[in-house]
Image (tube, rainbow, N blue to C red):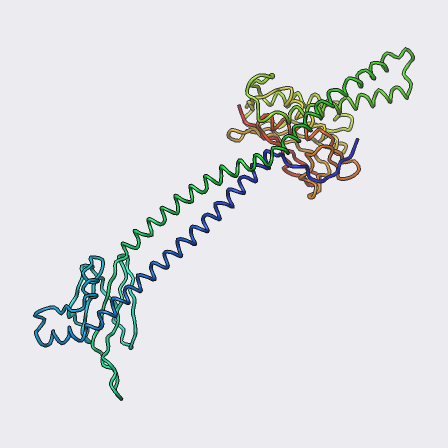
Length: 432
């Protein structure tokens, strides 16, 4: 039997295109999220900084009026409010702000604006010191006010200014920004998805055409080569003289080539179909346990040659069925291939077991043998055509055909365990 390289086969173009599409979408979404986050946090930081700057501006304007307000309080007993700074009055009359003037003892002298401020922390006492307070409704700035420095004297504390600004307008602006970024991101994602799908389809079209041409060539070549092999075997069988060793060898080689071509033709036909079929082609509902028993009976004579025992472990409770929807002849071929593979690698006198169970809506059949297992570095390649990792380890087309049949029925074939002395192949099929 020919030995092929163990290098991984080329991926299916459709699966590769789907995987690249998903990776591209994920990477694009990551970029959009990173860009939108950077824009949002940059603008939000700038707007908050502007709000703090506005509070400082208002506090500086109010600080210049504290000595005059204190003087009016002392002279006229708060008979009237002092209003001669248009900037302070204009800012303080907004509903989203409040300005408070306090004396050195912390007593309220005068206030402007309608914003309700929370109870504040102790005011700062250092010259030029500022104290910020944040609460869910806004920010508050407290600033001490000192008289001008005299020659050789120390500054005198005149009082405090407390300025509050509401953050509701800022939060509304940031909410509009978030909605705009979200809408823009969704629009950009949709446009990128449409353009990306078109570009991927155009990029993979030549590769898909080449793969389809190769599949057609494999099917056509297998089909056409069957005729000369059939003719050759017919001529050998029609030879009037008793078959000599040479003719017997020619007939055996021709039979092996015919079997190989039949397997190649079967694989080519399976690969040209997409997904499980639902109707036609001998599909029906049946008990998978009965089919497993037929597979054991078919492989029994070969197992007896090596003194192997074949065993079927049925699910509990007794009499339970494993209903499946599929093609009985193809599924029989699947499990026959797996049993032949297990018998081939099992030591004389060993045990080959089939275990069928039902888990929810899935049927799981394990094919267990006591062979040498599969090295870890080769476990991803055992389902390739003509895979080999050394003398005596050729897989031929049995496992690839079993994998193709399993996928044709909406299932999967995988290597569950491959340790020395116990190798387990798992067939996962949908229950009917």
